[in-house]
Length: 155
Image (cartoon, rainbow, N blue to C red; front, side, top):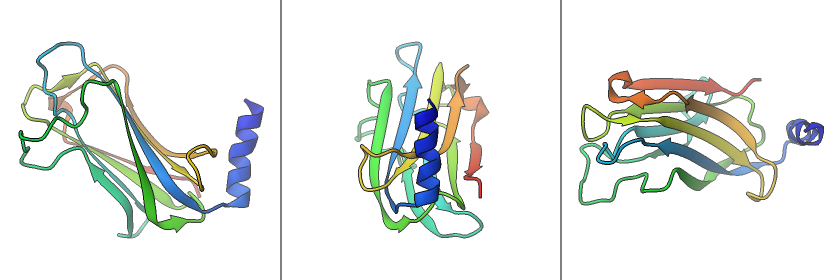
C-alpha cells in the first residue's frame, strides 16, 4: 500500500503529461424490466474556474433514440476510454462534473451505481490519477434526479 501511495505522490512531483483517461461506471439493477436508460450520465472534465472543457461524454442524447441500444448493456461494469485533445501537466486545478438525469421513464431505479474518472500518462498500464468518484451504494431512483456533483482536484 505504501508503494502505491508513493507512486501517486511521485506522479504529482514528476508531472508527466496526462494524455488519456478512463471513465468506469458500475450499474447494478435488481429487477428485470427496469428502465435500461437510467440514469442518464453526463460527465464533463474541465479546468476549474473556466469554461475550458477538456473532455465531455453523455450516455445518450435527449430525446432518447430507441433505435439505438441502451448505453449500459447487460454488463455490470462499463468503461469508456478516451484521449485528451489537450494533455494536462497536472491534475491540480481540474474538476469533473457528474450530472445524473432520468432515463426513459419516471420510475428508473438501480440498486447500486458508481462512476469514476481517471487520467493517465502515456499508457493505461501506467499509474493513473483518480479525478472524481460518484458512488450510490444504497441505490438511486429517478425521483432523486436531476443531480449534479462537482469534484475539484486539490491544488
